[in-house]
Image (cartoon, rainbow, N blue to C red; front, side, top):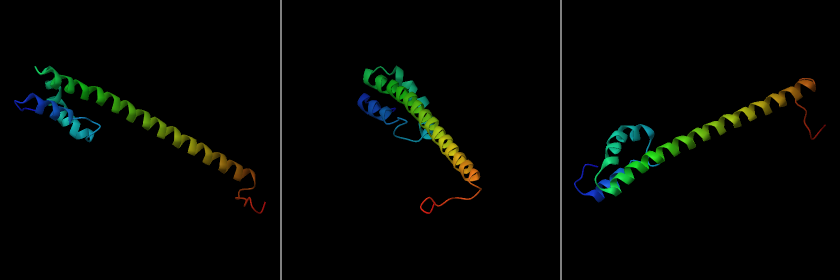
Length: 100
């Protein structure tokens, strides 16, 4: 990212994308990438701005995924509670539906 060659800087900053690396690594390199948002070469600056957009989108997707997982767990919990309730209503034991 410190190369004198603008093409190399453009490619280097594009590699600092949260979709390509773990968040802790991204956060370590993010400050250097942000400085390149003001690079005199338009392609370098554009790529540096792009990774910020990607970071925002990846965070939003991860948040959505987490909410979906929580809802699925909640549904699974509710189904388990209903199953236990039905079992309790039948006398506290599971009924083999093939024999019933």
